[in-house]
Image 1 (tube, rainbow, N blue to C red):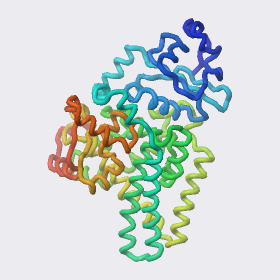
Image 2 (image 1 turned 90 degrees about the vertical axis):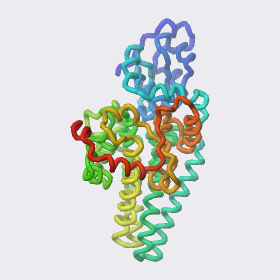
Image 3 (image 1 turned 135 degrees about the vertical axis):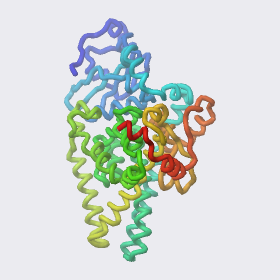
Image 4 (image 1 turned 30 degrees about the vertical axis):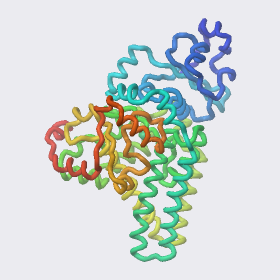
Length: 429
Ligand SMILES: [Zn+2]
């Protein structure tokens, strides 16, 4: 996108505007307030922000959005005006809100906008979105301690019952790590995008072959397009592929969902027509740092477990637990938190569902407060440790009546199973 170089009259008058949008004076590493941005860039923009970052331009856009607008509806209405590359190692993003007509068009797709505007006040959102990185660091350390203890148990006493004990501990604690990594994908672990991505990759995602900057696109597109056919995770919660008992079992076992999920997360970058594909090719390719992390973890886990325990340890104590407890757990959770036992047209009107559930279900299906899923979707800027408070506030609000809270994940599964086959779902394929 070519950068505009002509200054607007308001920019000239303000005394704040430098001579070129890429001028270093404009490239402070900060987000401008609405009034300052308006003074700098003129009255044309309803809201405006700018940030200078190293390398990761799209990551910065999301970071900037989370810091400033708190709403995915607003992100949908925000577009890139400038992408400056001066000097080469720096990129500066300038964003503006789309004109009113486009804004009106975009918001018609979201039935959730009123909830975002009414259930929490801006100051509550800001307060709940305050990061406390030490909370995540402590949880990450605890989860890895459990996983390492399970490895050690089998290494010291490699018999069938220690293996059977280790598999759920490793799988479930990695699932908990993955949910913390989900906050990392939203850039909500650390205030800095660079630090956030580095630690998310190093201690959470690289062990399963993922890199935040590359593999978070599927999830961000899911947030942006929930309840629309453009949602890349639609296969997880729509009923067209779960209209009968056998289809539901195929989905829950991962048989019909693993390829779709793996393709949209790991292969999105090479799918040219993917809506989530970034404009900048530099961030869509693996860097040396990425390769080192991925290779390092493969050597550490594959080599370490083989050396310590035996040739079977990597598939049995890593790949199998991840599949059973992380992948299938997340697959089931995503289905339960966005689906209804009815046709997709009606379900699309309300796909934000939270669960109260009991501690065992929460640990197994939705660790790290993911059961408060409506609050997460409404305000992805709120880190996982603040979701219980957000959920409490919105439940007390009379306008939350359209949202749904269910008591049990397995109770809902039983209800869905009983409703099958759903004829309307078969017709909607
Ligand atoms: Zn999310």
